[in-house]
Length: 157
Image (cartoon, rainbow, N blue to C red; front, side):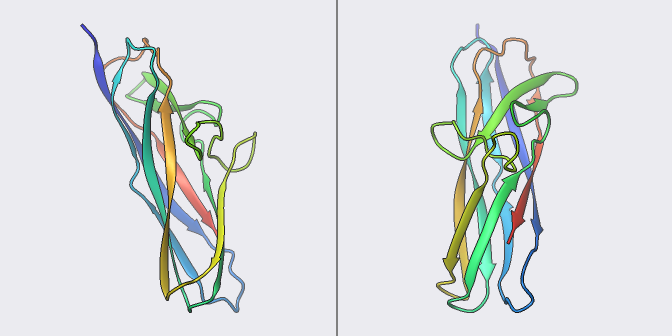
């Protein structure tokens, strides 16, 4: 009989402004979070899911928009983020690519950040970016429970 568990990743958002005084662009960030759902501890298969980060910018049509989206390591490190259910832990990571090769972080330790630049097509524009989450298979030491971690999203524009 296989043991099934539910795992969740909570994401908090923050925005750091680095706007020239003459700019009228204001941006905000939000996320749907990344819910891993049920993880089978007896399976050697990875548990892959996706989440969405949304960036909304407002200003005048044609205003230039430039920003960078960084993620904190949450629990653990960028090499292996960690979700917890009390003291039990479960390793996972977040990626900026569907191949799960570019760890989404803050640009340190070989991690990548996501950036964008464009001209506002309307007075408000929202762009979405996919977060690719993975729990590596074969973590048989995890116990049943609801695991969570908080990753801070930093938007610098």
